[in-house]
Length: 324
Ligand code: TXA
Ligand code: MG
Image 1 (cartoon, protein in one colour):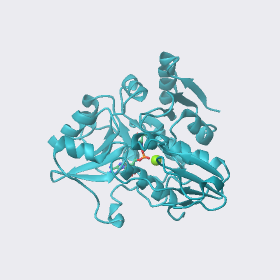
Image 2 (cartoon, helix red, strand yellow):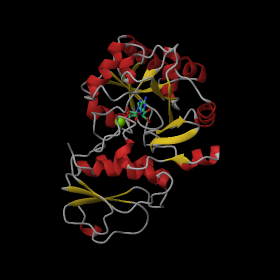
Image 3 (spheres, protein in one colour):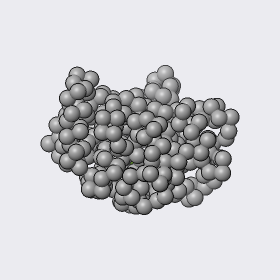
């Protein structure tokens, strides 16, 4: 059973325990502002292998390297001017940059799936202190069984992976609640590989440049983990519901009721006031709660597509995608 340490109560104990477990080449669940991560020393093959093992994740799907500061970032990746500008503006924060691996990098090829690039981000909050204390990057995917909904609380991690890992650091619910936005600068252009917790329009406002979306969904497998079905609850998922069918749990957004919701198995509201930031932070927890009601299906009401709505739609469309 995993030991759970509340980092708000005992930060020093949390760091010491994390270094002990990481030193034994075992993964630790760490809180980031986006979702909880399953972290291991990115430079140790055995440690990284355990992440794939615990998650049941295919090894061709590379991991994000999390760094504590820009000096650590530059030891492992090469920054073009535009990527540097993005890092300086948005780090620490929910932005991942795909960058060429530096010759000086000691990140193990297992963590990058043998690619000559590395996905990198500087997380906000307590996880950054853990990385600084270790002095090396942490590879960390979301701390969930592969294909399932990402965890936004220590309790989520414990329910899914608690029997398979030694330590969970608890810093309370994640503020952002969606995985990071992943971009790659190519030929001076910014390409969006995964919409996420940083609204892409903020990147556009900061740079005065367009963030380019993949032209077709099929062409989007540049991030190997972007498989169609993901974030899947047990119950099937129906989108854009204009009415509720018997036995369905409803997840909706904003003040407007949905026809028939008085007969719903359960009703959850992502944000009664219609705030997309609040909706993003609540999304995964409400999907888990809706699933736990035992409803025969989860129906989503309409959600706006602008701003963080882009990432919210990406996640719920994957949740609704045909399962393998
Ligand atoms: O917010 C987040 O990003 C969380 C927290 C823990 O930091 N992490 C996360 O990791 O969502 P994960 O493994 O679930 O997603 C990482 C994505 C995958 O889709 C992977 O394929 C992609 O990043 N990726 C990793 N390395 C890449 C690379 N070199 N080029 C393109 N995509 C890459
Ligand atoms: Mg994930």
